[in-house]
Image 1 (cartoon, rainbow, N blue to C red):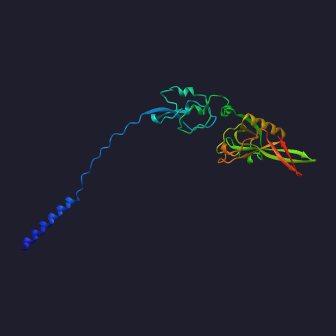
Image 2: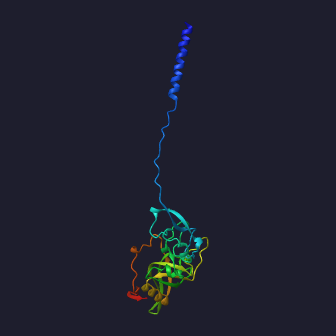
Length: 254
């Protein structure tokens, strides 16, 4: 009887072990086949081989050809298929707007003129230099491409007394250069220049010339968030200031 009981227990244990082995067996992995990815059509465009600062003359080492998706080529990009001799054709040109390494080269950011300052001018504008000092340029912290207001300070004599009068002549004026520097020197201290070159319209240039002959000019640095033209008052063509003295009003023109 004992043998029969042991046989039944052994058979039960075997059946249980087999069932556990079958239930714990990992299921067969389902193979997934990814569809082939569509191949992107590539072409070669001309890019900057290194950072190119403003005013740098270009040579063949300044460029390199870079593979680029054909459907992502923007307007003005130089392709090797269309301009295979572009590297030689652009040799000797000046950088009008800085490039970063790997940025596509566009001819509108280059200057074919040997006079870089003339190429930086907006069409219809003039470059006019004024005398400056540290006191008249926000402590010397006004740099090329900053926006400034031009303030005129003049004197007038009334009833035997001399008064100084100041007013803002022009607003939101672009600084082209300080002395002969058209870019901010990175890693160097601020150098106080003796002249600042401003970008002005012909009418504004006349105002500045008259103001320099009748007094001194100062530059007030504008915030980068306050340079939109539509938010600024229009510049008067005949600037004048109203002076109140001893109950009498008088307009003084510059």
